[in-house]
Length: 218
Image (cartoon, rainbow, N blue to C red; front, side, top):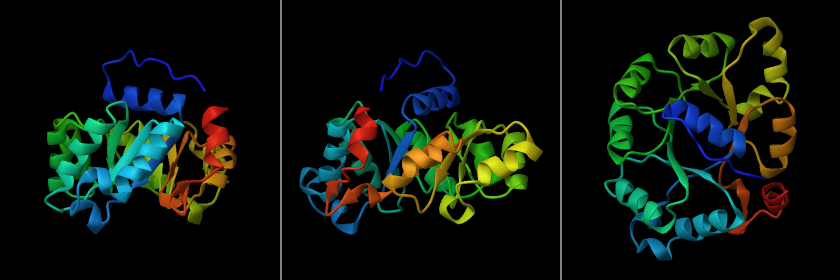
């Protein structure tokens, strides 16, 4: 798999091009212990090291109100500057503001909130909304969202995009997220989804799932 250079100043376009090169995001949610010990000794750090070694480009750190969340972001950047790091689970204005203050490249939300989208545009921050219905998808497009997150994807099913594509016509860049595993990566991409988001299911007993490696190196 070859990863091209991103030659655009539009942050939404940069994200879409990057995810076109490697249509995978891995979402990691910090545990309490990740805030309490030196970053290099955390489970989060060990998992990130494996992801980077395997060639994963896009990692989202789930936002948390914990006062040390921003320190985790900085620690990750210092250890792995090549990661295209974003934030997940952004559903409030304070969370979005913190993401923007840290200069993260993108954020994803579990919901579609016009106020959040307006604030994101004001902050020049890419906020990918979570959508579930055709009406939500159209509303997201009307708000200027070029990419959406279909959530929860496992509930809606692998045929969902195909079923709505004919009556809806043009669809935004669509990331399937929620309840998916490594074995779902190839089938869901083959079904027309533009990218897939996976959680800690990419790890089996703290080791990267072997199902990931052939796809990343193929």
